[in-house]
Length: 366
Image (cartoon, rainbow, N blue to C red):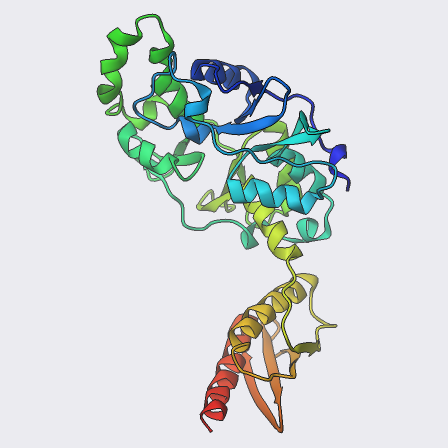
């Protein structure tokens, strides 16, 4: 898909000499998460991200945009969707400027990228369970904002746990920034600047939102993309049928998954595999991904000609499948072979390749 098909012209630009208060006011009014810094000719010179405003001591009325902006990065019609997503993930941005004739002419957001992927085969066949983060970073309702400050440096939204152990709300990075900086934008700036320290002791529950969007582990990624897009949110809590929290999934998690699935690694030897015809599509994808991982761990062996892997799945009961993996490593004048059989495909591959690597080490010592 040409990226000009997903470009939005609704963008926000500032000059390096503009006060930070202008950025904050416009971000709040337009729901922009990034401001593009340009010169008088609309050529990009930097980017301001919400996280750049996460500072306990900042004079938004007097400090200039140039003091908080990051180096500029942009895309144009010469780039493809994968490149756009790579830049967004690598720089941890929500929006990236789109250039036309060297000038900022629009933007592409995380949600624009998600919408472009909604019919992608990997996205329509992959469940939330395969992509979600199971270990939640959380806050308690009575945690001080000083604790939230440290956690929000690495993430945009954090679930807040109530006294009953269940999720009671969400604290977003913008909730925090707005609360911390609002007093400093008023006329009595000098008079109220001393309130910063006391503000950091305020409890998290005072700022959190009780609006929580949820999905199930079995939902497909394509099912939840419209939720992200329609609400303009960055994360969804994953719960099972019994309302037990299983994890969290973010919009950027889906983009990272897409990049990983599109990535094809190359080696200095041939890789051949067979036996996947009767595997489910998700199993085939997982098998290939695991194969690449273990091929990388085997690549230290010199003068490998070919790595052959034969997959087999058969049922020993009505409920579970047994996986058998047979691997062969073709070296000059020598063929190393190993096998692994387990109830889980990953364990079977792990068993086979570990046995193969032990043989390879003995071979190299000769």
